[in-house]
Image 1 (spheres, rainbow, N blue to C red):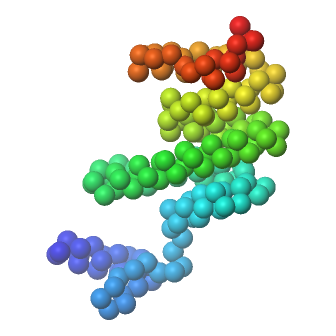
Image 2: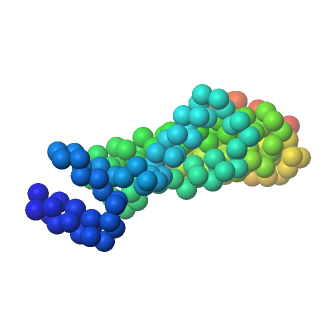
Image 3: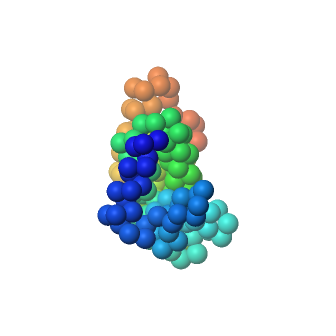
Length: 172
């Protein structure tokens, strides 16, 4: 508890106005921009109304949103995992909607960002392959499939699903 008091004292001296002392409750000032709140808001908007024309900015925010990197307390790990899953699903929404709108560059970037989070996520691989194929990049689509196939075999000892294989069946 002493450590908390010292930390609060130092913060209030170094960054006046950051904390609001409401008696028994200590909180951040409403003027503070919390990136986690912004990211969660974007994820909610995506799930409710879709892209709505802001794919590029939303994609960049989601791609680089980490919660307290380098912290390993149990409650933080739980929240990091939850944010990571939310980001993954939001990136898939961006990829799927961008693909449907024929915005293949954004679909590619969103799929790649999803695969950075989960390299073996089949839906992300499928969207990446479809975006490459739509742009006429059959070799890139095949390369993405082969990379996925190799990782899946090495990490889990299994082969890609028939659905993923069908996406590149006519390329070979």
